[in-house]
Length: 90
Figure 1 (cartoon, helix red, strand yellow):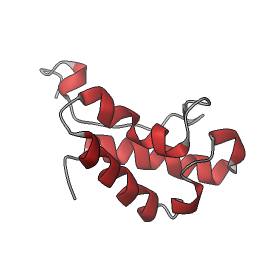
Figure 2: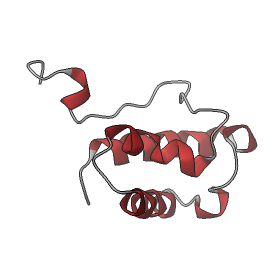
Figure 3: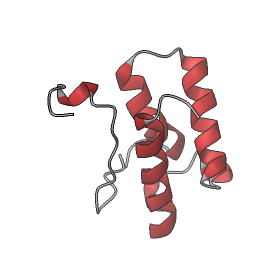
């Protein structure tokens, strides 16, 4: 693992304070690491984000901002973002 540069290690992590971007919606927060990799088309990113929203049961909160969620909901967003960005597919 250490022989790879950090951006090629294919791992995700959740910070204790979740590190969600306050100016991005929940959907945008989950999709952010996927967009940064630039290996996927927008439609594929949208599909993966929708899958993760469903998995963490936050589909109806997709267009809200982090400050509009409870602490537990914010934690689920952070987990969805880390998990989805570190796994190539289901």
